[in-house]
Image (tube, rainbow, N blue to C red; front, side, top):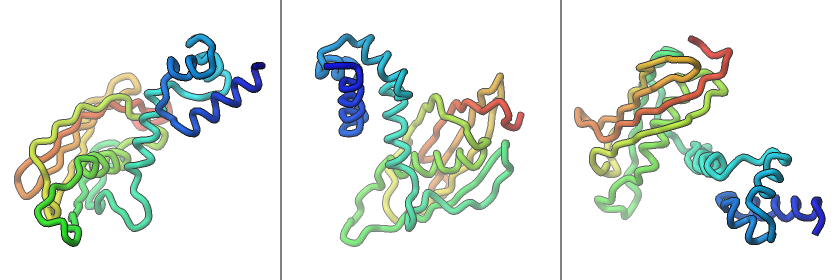
Length: 179
């Protein structure tokens, strides 16, 4: 197999499963892990962690008709506030809201605070309790620290007065971003 064929197979394998590891790709294509890494680098394909993050963002990105919350207040570079009224699904009974819904609201609000082109590098989350469909969630994001192109943003989500989610995000801000 020549270089062009191998790289084409690499691209096809990643299109079919973007979360496949370099080790698995190396085994499939019968080359070394280092060869796979060099091929990915040459093709501009990120490592599996970055691909996983991209897949998660695509799945959690609000689509037309969906919402990750109504923006209530914003001070760009400082803080933002949103509200999300969760709709009980017909026939869902007292089922809990999926945790990714809380993360989607937090991430969407975070994106309102940080400059465009910022990338989330780390997130530490705590889900305090299950949220039931039909609850009204209020999220608050605030920048708590800025240091050398990295911002730390705290996002809390409350239902009535009870905190149901807390996330601390470390975000890489582009050089031209607000200080």
